[in-house]
Image (cartoon, rainbow, N blue to C red; front, side, top):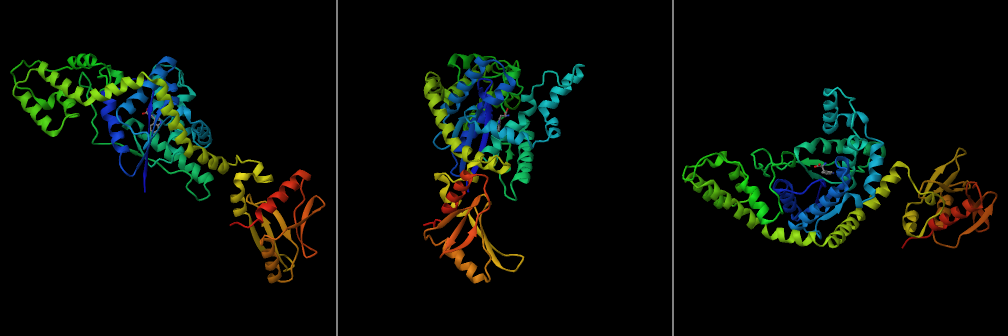
Amino acid sequence: MTTRILTGITTTGTPHLGNYAGAIRPAIVASRAADADSFYFLADYHALIKCDDPVRIQRSRLEIAATWLACGLDVDKATFYRQSDIPEIPELTWLLTCVAGKGLLNRAHAYKASVDKNVEAGEDPDAGVTMGLFSYPVLMAADILMFNAHKVPVGRDQIQHVEMARDIGQRFNHLFGKGRELFTLPEAVIEESVATLPGLDGRKMSKSYDNTIPLFGTAKQLKDAIARIVTDSRLPGEPKDADSSHLFTLYQAFATAEQQAAFRAELEGGLAWGEAKQALFTLLDNELGEARERYHALIERPSDLEDILLAGAAKARKTATPFLGELREAVGLRSFREQVGVAGGEKKKAAKSARFVSFRDEEGSFRFRLLDAAGEQLLLSVAFADGKTAGQVNKRLQSGEALDVREQGAGFAVWLDGACVAESPAFADAAAREAAIARLREALTPQE
Ligand code: TRP
C-alpha cells in the first residue's frame, strides 16, 4: 500500500531557512520513502487571497519552484505542480462549496480573526473580508480531496483546515457516494521532530517578524544575516551557555551529533561570538552551497521550469481528470450522450453494464426487461407461459446471432423465428429511436 502525501505551499514570499528546515527538507525526505506517493504543489490560487501584487505572485512562484527542485525533489517520483494548472481544482471547489456548511466556514480561525479584529475596531464585522478569504478552506479541501491524500503535512495553524476538508469530504461521500467512499478522508500530520527555527532575534523565524535568514541569497547575504543574529554580551574567552543561545539552536538544526557536541564544547570554552557566527556560516554554506548553485541556474532558465511544472500538471491531471468525471457523474452532471447512444470509447463499459432483469408479471407470466448502462429500459419482453421459454429467448438474444429489429410505432420490436419477442418503449422521435437501437445492438454484442 502506498501512502499519498500531499501538501501545498502558498506562493507569496521567498523561502527562508525556516521554511527549509521546517517544511521543504522533511517533505523531500518523506517523498523518497519507497511507499510514498507525494503530491507537492504551489498553492498559487491561495496566494491570490492574500496578495494583489502580480509581480510578487509571479516572482514567488518561480522562486518556490526553483527552491524545491534545487533542494533535490525528484519530480519523476513525486508529482510537483502549480494548483492553477489544474482546472479540475476550481471545478471541484464549486462542487464542495455546494455541500460545505456556511456555519462550518464561519468557524475558520483565519476568518474569525479578521472578524474579531473588525469588531474590536468598531468596524463592520466583514469589512475587508473577501469571499476568497471566507472560502479559503473549501479551496484547500479541493486540493486535498482531488487527489485522495491520506496524509497532509502542515503547520499547526493549518490543522483546522485539514479537519474541514475531512468534514466536507465526509458530507459529500454521504450525499453522493451511495455507500461508497468517493473521497479518502485526509489526516493532518504534524512533524514533532522537525525543527522550528528561531530567527535572528530568537523569536520563531518568520517573514512577518522580519527576522529571517535567506535560503538562497548570495554567500555575502548569508554572512550579513548571520552577523545580525542577536547574542548576549559575553566577551571572547567567557564561557557561553549553548542552550540559551539561538545561534546554537540554528547550528543544531544542520549539524551532526558530533559537530553539535564539538561546537557546544567550544562555546563553553569561551569561543568568541564572532567566531561562532563564522562557524555557523561555514556549516550553512556547506549544507546549502551546491543547492544554491542549482537554484540560481534554475532561476535563470524559467522556460525549463515552466516545462517541468507543466509536465507535473499533466501527471497530476491523469488522476484529476477521470476522478472529476466520476464526481460530476455522482452529482448528476452527466453526458446526455450516454442516454441516447454510446460513443466508441465507452463501448465496452456500456455493453458490460447493460443487463437483463427477469420477473413475473401480474398475470403470473414470465417476462424480462433489458436495461441499458444508465438503467433505461431498452426492451420489455412479451409474456411467456413458462420461465424456461423466457430464459431461452433471453439467451438467444445474447448469443450474437443477427438481430431482427423492426420499427414499430414510436419504438421498435425484436423478432425471433417470425414472432415478436420483445418491444421497446415509445421514443420522442426517430433519432432517439435510432440511438436506442444502436445501444441495443451494442448491449447484445457478446464480449470477448
Ligand atoms: N494553506 C496552506 C498554508 O498556507 C497551503 C495549502 C494550500 C495547503 N492548499 C493546501 C497545505 C493543501 C496542505 C494541503 O500553509
